[in-house]
Amino acid sequence: MKILLSLLVSVTSLFSTEISDFINRDNCDQVVNKAVYSVCYDYHHKGATYVAYLLDGELVNRANIKKRGSFYTEKNIPKRYRSYPKDYRNSGYDRGHLASDASFDHDQKAMRKTYSMANIIPQSPLVNRRLWSKAEKYERYIASKLGKVTVINGVRYAKNAKRIGKNRISVPDGFWKMIYNDAKQFKKCFYYTNDLEIDTRKDTLRHHQVDCSKL
Image (tube, rainbow, N blue to C red; front, side, top):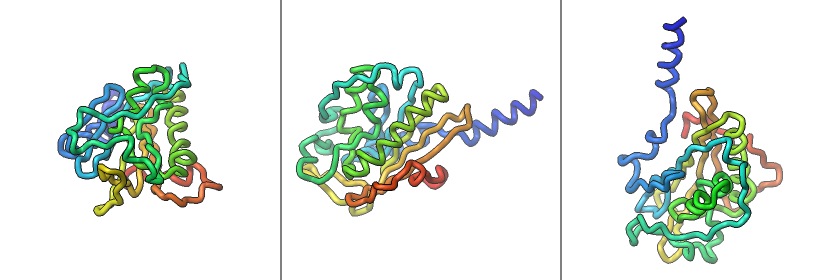
């Protein structure tokens, strides 16, 4: 029995997912540590390629602070690579969170950190408000059921990505969310195309579920 358990632990470890698989010095021009989440930042696109964090199921729905913050420039990033809230004006895109404010609204300081522009990408308003928000709710639901989950959000940019604003921020082609707890053998992934004209009328979370190994 001990040998079997040892083998099971070894197999789980072999196929487990780690934040460091995505957020590391090889993948990122700069790693921005916001304490409650980490950002893999790309200087060329002036935006995140990955944002990851751990959610505690006992905290995600504890307070639900109503007052939201204001977006602010991330001063830890060199000036020439920063994005600014004003870059989004009249662009047609939302300032879209990768680490959701609602997943950290149990604490004012934690929630405030999610308004860093390092955590924000240009998102289609329809996708941001009607589709991506379902995945954000789902991560909190799973955290409350399993006790804890790790969430990794990834962003895909085209080689010649569309740019917005004075600082020429890249607009992603799409983005994804991975939610997992290796100890509980749970992992699900969801992918979203950043489409300004997407039809959301019959959309469900299941429509966006993808094979995690393909990300």
